[in-house]
Length: 366
Ligand SMILES: C[S@@+](CC[C@H](N)C(=O)[O-])C[C@H]1O[C@@H](n2cnc3c(N)ncnc32)[C@H](O)[C@@H]1O
Ligand SMILES: [Zn+2]
Image (cartoon, rainbow, N blue to C red):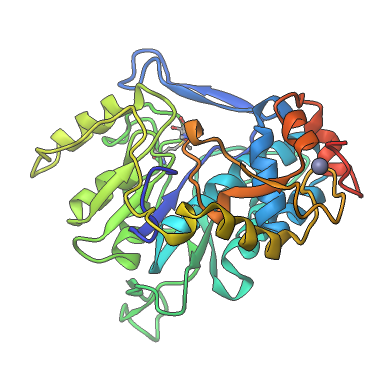
């Protein structure tokens, strides 16, 4: 995503790992055999640069991370927050986002999204209630997922789906869709569209979302595309699409599913390298002293590492996310450090994660 241009995407559908503390593998003999993903989280999964980014540039998101009780939850939220921040950069003003999760983390993810998009841009918490799934003797059986729906601005694309009314008085007349969806069953073992990919979602769910929140020719992005359900729905509805998945084998299912469509897709670009942004020409990026002045306005004369003040002449701009990791030379990816902190930065250990999130004075570099 770091290689994609800002304001280039119309709709983002994300169905990431849910922090379920399970790891998933496709069933042997299924079309997805050998594929799967991990959903257990620890400090090992956190890149300290993400924390720099969140703390330096998005303090309200940082507060949400600090509010999470468990270290594994903080790790998961840090991982989600950097991706959701990137998604918000990619979306157009008219764009919107649907984040599929479940009640394990939906309350925290909602706070993260409120912090990124603004509370007033929250549109719905959709309850997708399905028949399959767990039963419990000690609690009510859990039979629903949560889909959080946010827009970038007030001018977002939306065509409200109509369903036929079930009430006797309305006699099947069309009425606007509610935020509780009970009419889309989960995929059972016999479903024709089932690929065997873990946590595959029904096409009907994604068709509804794509149809409501994008137009023909729009670009739909799924940054956790798995076996490509959202992308197949986008293709069927004549949208452009882009999908990303860390599972390097998942694209095989995407190609296979796209070939099976009534009108098979002929041109699909599959790349394993990161694209390069072409929208980075800006006066600030080329002029270091101007850049430092802007950062001084943001940070005052304080080192972002040790918090020592009055260091005007000594502070140097440092990339928060390295350029090799796709970080750009833009103000939103730069911070000012004193020479000592600049050196200490590369020597930070993983233990740093815990200390950093629970350190009230923020003297973590010293
Ligand atoms: C719940 S599944 C998505 C299923 C998909 N909606 C479908 O219907 O097939 C989550 C996906 O996120 C992918 N994933 C996990 N971490 C990722 C990361 N850091 N970047 C990209 N994809 C990731 C996993 O490989 C998995 O395919
Ligand atoms: Zn310092």
